[in-house]
Length: 233
Image 1 (tube, rainbow, N blue to C red):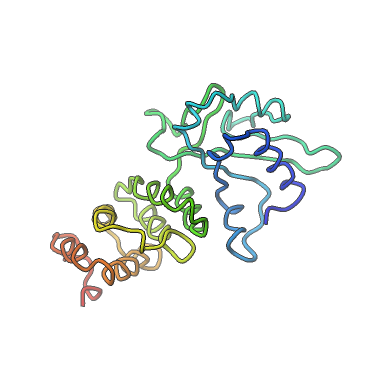
Image 2 (cartoon, helix red, strand yellow):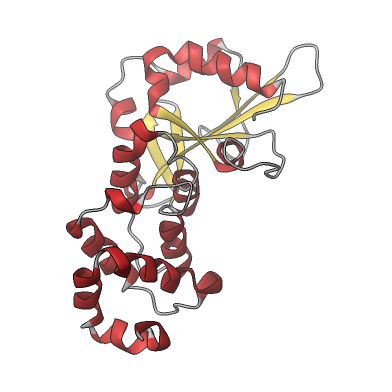
């Protein structure tokens, strides 16, 4: 779990956010600690933000952070914040992230509210989803988030997308044939199936057991017929 004294200040932040706290999802290594024993140590806390909800939220995040004593970190202004923990040499550091589709056209920032940005990301958000599936009430939103990711031919993003449907992520049983067609279309953009120790072929092998028609339709495409080789047998 999140170590002390940082855990106390995560809870302080979530309490100060009130109902808006539901739009903050702990991500990165801190999220993995809830599912994996001996996950790597870190004291930073990453949050994936529900951008649409927070843009409409009357609560002003900038004012909340100032009241709690946070200041923007130089060089990462308005998406990384820190505060000194009283009577301690420890620092509480938080970073905001958001889905890439909301980013500015010219850079990596996502405008959330006045004075609050988030860093656009793909892979990190998917890594969080890969360890959040045990929260059954979140599964529909996690599935929507995964299906909205634009792979754009990036093999590593595609493998993170496959991981989102791993043992701690979104159950394959939640997928519909339309969802599977969407996922296959994303995978078909990738040229190198061997990336990350062949995670994509293993993912496709799982899908074909539950959705053979959709996978076979995808196999009719020139790319999949050419690339899968031995897997098709």
